[in-house]
Image (cartoon, rainbow, N blue to C red):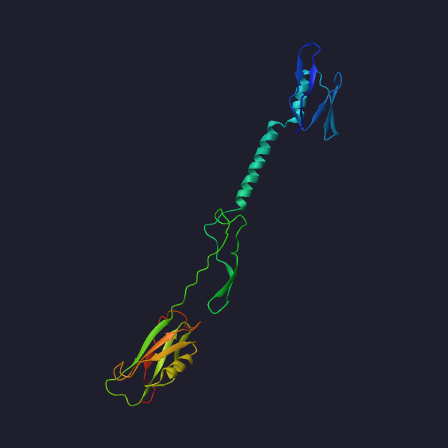
Length: 244
């Protein structure tokens, strides 16, 4: 920055000197008895002013030339305020970040998996709630398979016969074909997995007599899609239509 003062001596008061206000970035050159001002900025002439009638008003002319009026100053401050408000409106912090997008889970090994995802949509570079998101914590919850029991029992000894099993879930209501009363766990499992609304189950059978004159089947719904997790309805057995 260049600060200079214009200095001259009044003819009426030779011992008294007068100074103009400080000049910022502009150099006001006065040669001999000044009759005009030459305004130079960066070594180039910007303007020429005729000297006022009195030397007292010369300083005022310099001041008016170098400093804006009050109206210009108010307009400048108002413009800066509008820019600050616009910048504040551009970024509005949110309470929490949105969920990640396009999640992809793939096996990495027998005991690990790979999780890939894109950042949430509409997250501004300034961050969320005043701070940028610097990382994500991935938690894996192991699924708890639904386990049900199905008992085959009778008052007296069972010599022959069969039954049907009906299963209901969000995919619909389906019924198996007739299952022999003493079917093995493999036969019972295959009958259930033939249903369109069941993708996979695991079945185990108790010894004879766990239920009165019959068996108790334990069914684990371990399907990945159709019977994943908790099931809201139980297996229902019915002997209608099966040979006694």
